[in-house]
Image 1 (cartoon, rainbow, N blue to C red):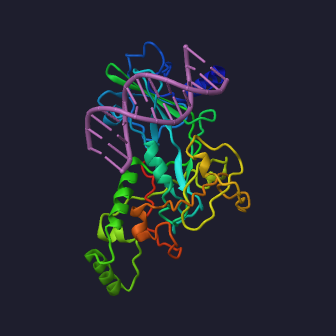
Image 2 (cartoon, chains in turn yellow, brown, red; image 1 turned 45 degrees about the vertical axis):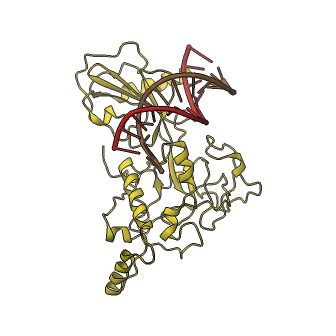
Length: 328
DNA sequence: TGTTGCGGGTGGT
DNA sequence: ACCACCCGCAACA
């Protein structure tokens, strides 16, 4: 469809990638260049309409990695692996950490895990989470294509991500393990006692957020600085569970993303988030009084989605975001 | 429990 | 035909 438009973009991309091999090829070409003179270093955050040729020895390329949350898409072509972007999970309250960073979590790749993830709460404020779907490719998610050919691995990206960068896979894994560690605390646990000891010694109150760092490894958390405040833009949608007492949003627009939100979860009585327009998320709702946040892991100590612990959560951690970190 | 890749199948254009 | 996407399965970590 609209191939014309696509071609136009292609031309841009060609002129844009001036270095190295002429990117006169397309991932769908029957024959791809084998007289490559320069292979590219792995690109962790490929964006826009770009093409890269990696060495077939490149581990990251072999695994079709990307720091964007990409999921496999069936294109019925076993020779070309296609992946589409899942976007980024943000805080429905648009909260910020103490140092002014936003929450940009990595969407779980597996559908089931992602739905479960959306029922969890913001690690920073316990508010509801929201999935900002990617619409960077003519309204559809950005797609990445991988094709192994000879001693090279050809990569082609279509679309420009219209959302902030999520955590990298490593950061997301680190955060998961940190959360898991938190649940390990039980009121009677020796670790908790140790924490109390520390508190008595330092006079400081260690919050659940800080604990992991004291008791275990620190987490990486850098914030994506690109896209800050970007979220307010187009109304994205998907839902979330009901977390900390915040009234889930109501959906103003329609456009409920891609089935992330079951119709049944929409609330008829939508209250327009009086967020002076700029407010980030206008739109969808996610009522779910389903006691969602049943997520034990988060709940255990973080006050989970329940009656929230007084808001100010010292941060320092919860959201190991990053992205801005690794520079290409 | 989650990631990754595969492929059958559906519906829209 | 092509594309987006749903679903289940299997291998793997």
